[in-house]
Length: 94
Length: 180
Image 1 (tube, rainbow over the protein chains, first blue to last red):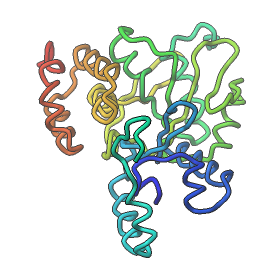
Image 2 (cartoon, each protein chain N blue to C red):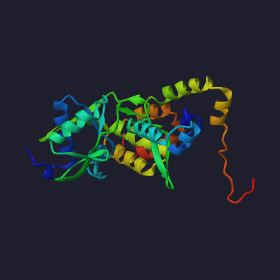
Image 3 (cartoon, rainbow over the protein chains, first blue to last red):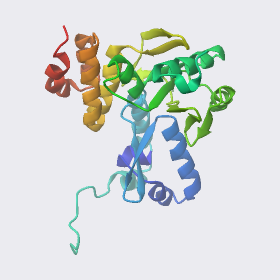
Image 4 (tube, rainbow over the protein chains, first blue to last red):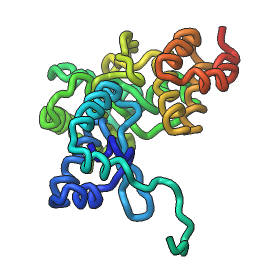
């Protein structure tokens, strides 16, 4: 759900968001990558995961996740979706 | 039987695939090795991607591969007598969102080899180009389209279904050159 809402993410931030341990999140990400649902790439020292655009059931899975997200409590839905995605210049005070 | 160290990539793929088939495991050749075969060696790949078409348990694949002296390293399999590495990407066998409907079969002295047809091989490479802008995969798609009779009309239909009609229009000439 985190990856669906945010488009990409890494294990530590997902664990932090759901206030859970890192290890099970890493294991699940690994399993989903092995199953072809997710793909990953390195950004510096961080492994970023996204949905695999070549996964044959992606449309159906995303429809299900979209429906699931619509049932989330409004505050949680907002905190998943409403994150700053635009760039921020280094050193900018605000 | 030819020893593994003397097998070409296609012969090795046929050997492994036939061995797996005898144990009820369907694994279809896809990826760069398909490009290599369809382009008659104009592209070289060290990988042999055998798609685990019906999601057979990993343990069954490990056991079958061990019987022919392949050892698992990380997520792929290696053999001491060949530089080729074998991977089993997860199924189902698809090109983009569509299932692969027609499998090509080639016979070698080491066994029969089931692989993507030239048309599906082009689609498979184009999927990587469309979604990740991978220029190497576009070059491979062009190689196969030129070497074999890839069905350009079918590739156009599939590209539209993938939502990539615009990108296909940009590369259509490259693909069509030298084909009917």
